[in-house]
Amino acid sequence: MNILIVNNSKLPVIYYGGTERVIWYLGKTLTRLGHKVSFLVAQGSTCDFAKIIERNPEVDVIDQIPADIDLVHFHFTPKGVEKLQVPYLITIHGNPNQAESLDKNAVFVSKNHAKRHNAEAFVHNGLDWDDYDTFDFAEKRNYFHFLGKAAWRVKNVKGAINTTLKLKGERIHVLGGSRLNIKMGFRFTWQPRARFYGMVGGEEKMNQLKHSKGLVFPVRWHEPFGLAIIESLYFGAPVFGTPHGSLPELVNEDIGFLSHSSATLSEAMKQYQDYNPKTCHDYAATHFNTEVMSKAYLNLYEKVMNGENINQNIPNRILKDEPKFLNWEA
Image 1 (cartoon, rainbow, N blue to C red):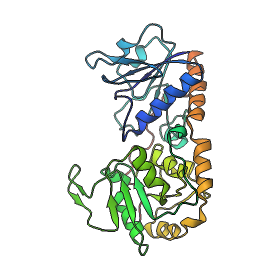
Image 2: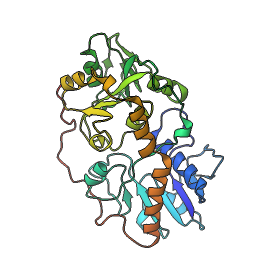
Image 3: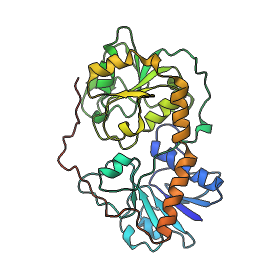
Image 4: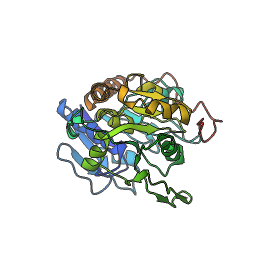
């Protein structure tokens, strides 16, 4: 199959860029499985296993699809996609706003994500764990961590910090934010037991995760998927979060604990040693690898190439009047 993967951003990504890493690993694995893959992506992109076609931002993306492509896999919803004569599907990575139209061939990244948009089709994200360090399961763990875009208030880094600091002597490392944030309103976190590391990637991030007692992830929105969850689990760190979005789907009682309450989460975190690092690791490695993801997409590719619908109905946002911030008992 000759597959074109389309996105707005530049490849490969060096530090932060969850969607870009998923796209990269998808293309790499499809190539390994015997398919021909090309990327239609931002100028300056490079790749050693697939052809790069640089997008012209002045031309509609559907007018830049080569004639020999069998299927197009978009990672955003392009203008005029319904006019495309080539079979296609669209992965929705985020939470679309109320005004955004969704396509009949939309694919979501968790079952919850799909259900909230009156859809059935979803594929869990997967990562190529061969790119990640090995580690000693018995290695000493010294702190908890938060991983994500801390500037987004729905990620609730404040809740993660305060929940950890309820525990005497415990520290939290914030990966993905700074102590002083003025981009989304002035915010300064003075607490010395919370250390900030900014946007981290590669060896630095892996080194942080392999020494963590657990991911503290009290999000206040419907998390579509959560790469932070599976990366933390891979390095043996259990997940302590809220039961919003994909979290109940991804986090079972063997690998973490979910609650709306900061006090309840804090109590659970005292028992972090009850969670076996190898169990956490094996769960992520088995269920959220790039081969599982790629084969799930191949099944959907076959459906659209056979003229079948990905979803029974055109997806739409069901929950339109929800509060901006979901339940959290500080």
